[in-house]
Image (tube, rainbow, N blue to C red; front, side, top):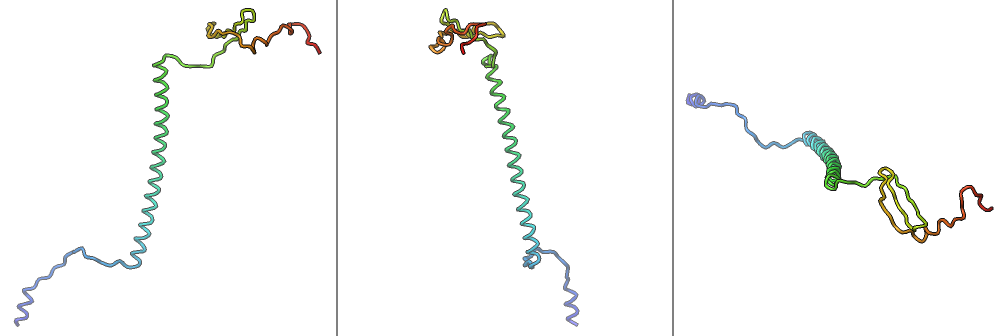
Length: 132
């Protein structure tokens, strides 16, 4: 009867412990597939992030250029524009004048070049036929 008394003194309960367990081949294969998928997703995300960052950098560069251009215009208070002008070659005074047609102001006056001096020798008069 001594044995029965010893059994009454033993108590058993269930517990949970984190213990090392070797993975089966099927589990290794499943985890390998999950790893490959996660790596692919990470690479795709990195490429997408790089693309978005490049897009933002390009937009930022456009804005920087716009700001720099506008700042320069405001600071200088002028810009260069293609403007209709008239070139007048005065053979009597040997002077060339460039006049703005929108404002009527002379923007440049200079001496005729040697090439320009040879342009009109007086042979081509209005209303006369050229020699054939």
